[in-house]
Amino acid sequence: MFAPTYLDWNATTPLDPAVREAMLPWLDARYGNASSRHEYGRQARAAIDEARARVAAALGAHATEVVFTSGGSEANNLFVKGAAALKKPALIAVSAIEHPCVREPARQLARQGWTLREIAVDAQGRIDAEDWRAVLAGRPALVSVMLANNETGVLQDVAALAAEARAAGALFHTDAVQALGKMAVDFRTLGVHGLTVSAHKIGGPLGAGALVLDKRVELAPLIAGGGQERGLRSGTENVAAIVGFGVACERALARGAAEAERLAALRDELERGLAAHGAKLFSAGAPRLPNTSFFAVEGIDGETLVGRLDRAGFACASGSACSSADPRPSGVLLAMGVEPVLARGAVRVSLGRDSTAEDVRGFLGALGRLVDELKNLTAMAV
Image 1 (cartoon, rainbow, N blue to C red):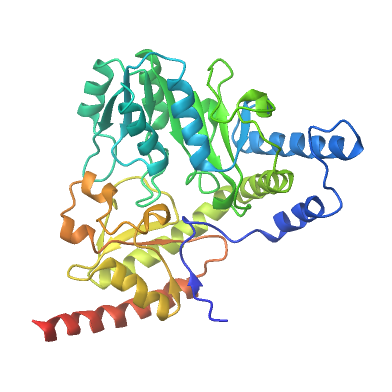
Image 2 (cartoon, rainbow, N blue to C red; image 1 turned 90 degrees about the vertical axis):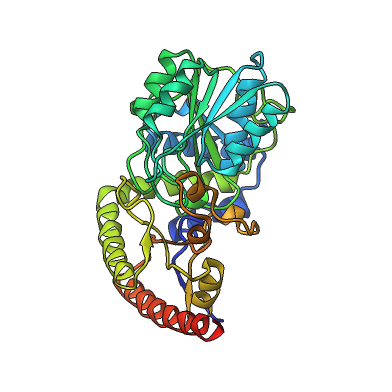
């Protein structure tokens, strides 16, 4: 089977072998419902409790603050909609570069009487300080700013933003889905009311995520029923996926800073090569995740280049995996003031635990050949 070199780790990650081994018993002989009172159920409940403790340890949180969900999208919706449901309509502020699973719930609230304000970013993709002050002056009730952007990899100073938002009386949430496993993420240090993470971004299974929630914050559940997850997320727990999530968090924590340094060195080599091919690197002047490069080659369509790279044996992306069906230019780049024609050329390369220097060099070689071919085709068509 044709298997391109995988350079799309921000979209999803292959299941860690240790995670798979931990999950297997819960897909076979250990099939109990965690709400059952018999031995099978008690085993399942104990496994969930252990996984919850592992997730909490990876995030500097207490186990009782971890609410398991089906993934990052549900966790983000749970905080945004759940907090809003217990408040009178007021001002909600989200950054202009949020993932759709934060932006769209906020837009739904706007149709229900809330006032939505998008917080501007600068040319590097960082929160614009002047606009942020204007937002706070409006006394928002809810604020959500992502810790690490899924396209550019840009990091926000969430701890500072959260402290200022708290002082203004707002609840502050951060989507940390891309950050976990690539940098230290500490719930206490960040000082947020809610924080979202997802298993499949760190070598865990699809279908498991969590909202880490300050226990002083009340939310209305999205799903009512049997009262699982402190009544915040009813439904029989996916024990195998939750167990895998816990092990994936433990493995990510163990890799720690050494892995981040390795990936940063690979990314730097990649970006030196990209610059040599005339690529425009987005957000190169801002603090970023160590594994992410977002670039464009002027005059070359990003989707076309990604398709050619795939056929040449390298799997990367033209932006967010969740919006790949949307033909419009990256909303993140447009919010940064990038011209639409250049934004349409955007390509994202994201590295992971299996990525090597040989992968990077092979990608750069293929990119150089394809850029030359596409430029020649363009010249012939003129």
